[in-house]
Image (cartoon, rainbow, N blue to C red; front, side, top):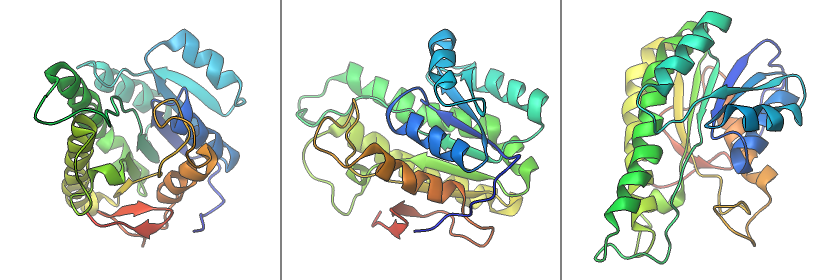
Length: 235
């Protein structure tokens, strides 16, 4: 798995970028030349985190579960940069491995879909014109093999069904944005040792590397696919 290494002057936005995989993805993108905006709910805390990554990383207020936040963020990015080269839809909540679909917690399920699906959808729709303006936009939906119908079983019903829906959205967005030169892919970072994944997983840098791979694909790279570590996964 290799990435293009010359990205000076390009702009990326990573939602949920203040910790875990999002923060590491921002760090890796900045390291290869991107100006990176990390989307955060608490701007003051986000700015503190951004400063730890250097001058190429900034915080932008973006609560993906808030109905108007994506439009405000798009307006800010558009006024400052006039385009967006990479959007990483990383924000996600409610990994619920011990839950059962036949004993649904509707609050958890609705919250999971509000962030994991509708949040990603809102952000993609709001920022798609700026990705198109880039001429080589890349939209990366951070998904999970837990959302693969091919391997899905019992457990994590809110998380798995929301990620399966995100995968479906990835296919639709890839088809709609193909003519604009925007590549859209879903990426499973694997089981990563983060606050959500818990201890014992692979290093966060390894999980983020697959996201950066999708963010830096060449213009003839794949679109509408589902990958981990640059290798296709079954839907």
